[in-house]
Amino acid sequence: MGPGTRAAAAMAALAMASGLALGQARAGEIYAGVYGHDVTFVGDAIGLGAAGREGGADFHLGYRTDRIQALTLIGRPHIHMFGSINTNNTSNFVAAGFDWKVGLKGPVYLRPGMGLAYTDGKTELPPANAPGLSAAEIARRTNLYYTRIAFGSRVLFEPELALGVNLSDRLSLEASYTHLSNGQIFHKGKNQGLDDAGVRMNWKFGR
Image (cartoon, rainbow, N blue to C red; front, side, top):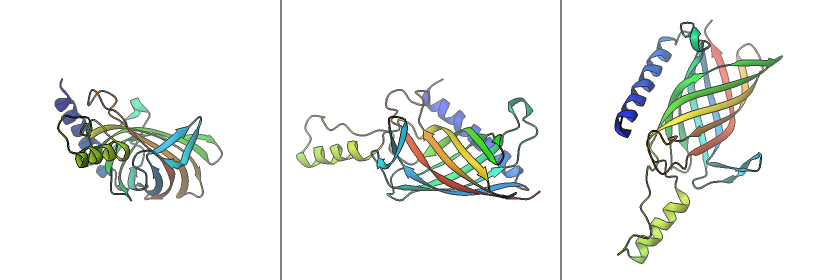
């Protein structure tokens, strides 16, 4: 199966997840968050003040279903779908997938998840050492290398992890991390990826 076929299959799965989510719209959560875009990791700490290539902030706005009772074999997950807009107008994306709310102690819980995303960011960057380039073109390409992510593919995996606390029956707050990368499955070669880290609020509605 070639990269194009894998990408098509991935997008079909994304569409199916979105359809299931809309079918569960009678109950669920809406959520919104602010994230550092392309954050770096220093040792074991998230360098929220240190941006990677692209920087800026991301605003996430999404919807999460109630638990899907029919999916008992995989732990009755929620289905999430959200969009992310970057303040520097670099790599925006939409994503959909599954997540599981796991109670820890009292109001505290963990929420791991996995999904697929589609980005409008760069898939490849032009080489700055190609022969015959003008000085201006070399400078332009060098600047791209230091300021843009080369994802390798527009279709990406979207693993995520959040630590949350229930503030009431309907309101919860989460510290959230989202990663995008092709996993060397949708593309062979460049796989620089994107790390988003921030906070989001969830509001439960329906039954």
